[in-house]
Image 1 (cartoon, rainbow, N blue to C red):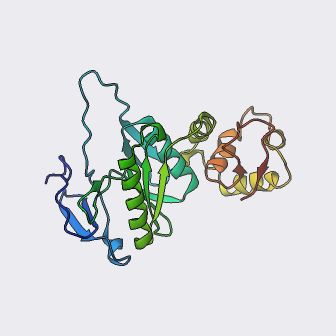
Image 2: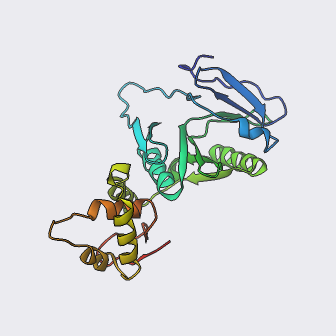
Length: 246
């Protein structure tokens, strides 16, 4: 099967199976029963190629992942913000869209939305699927995927809803996710020291104010994105928002 077309599901063989594509578009497969061999799963090409029906509104695009420094495909806005959330909350080094085909022992199958790999080598399989559109069949596939990940020592995250507040906060912080906004070592240590003496975002903003309006705001927000300074993204971010060191 070509890299362009992905991987088509086939009949089950009585075992849980993982299939993926490498950078040359070659298909690989192994049984999902061994945490050691599962480390060989290193996808590159997308295993599923979503189409677009006539008149269908598309939300396909690419998210720039700060952790990996690369663009990653998405086909919905929930997928877009879910990647942003995973990128923010984890020290991601790699992120892949539609990375593999899972075929379960009974022949059922599932294409997870993303595979993230963090700095410690932990694999995180992610599905982003609206709760309002989740069927009993979907729930069964998600549960089988969770069980497979548990056997392999992987993490599994199902994101089925996201509040507007979380989405708005992520989009705000992500404006300064790029490394070009990272402060130099001296400025970073200064901002972290200031944050240890302040209780709210407003106090910290006032403490780092200079005669150049907004001079340190990009660096400050970058530190929030990297979780070097903590803030609750489940609540609206205002000058009254409590802050803390992680």
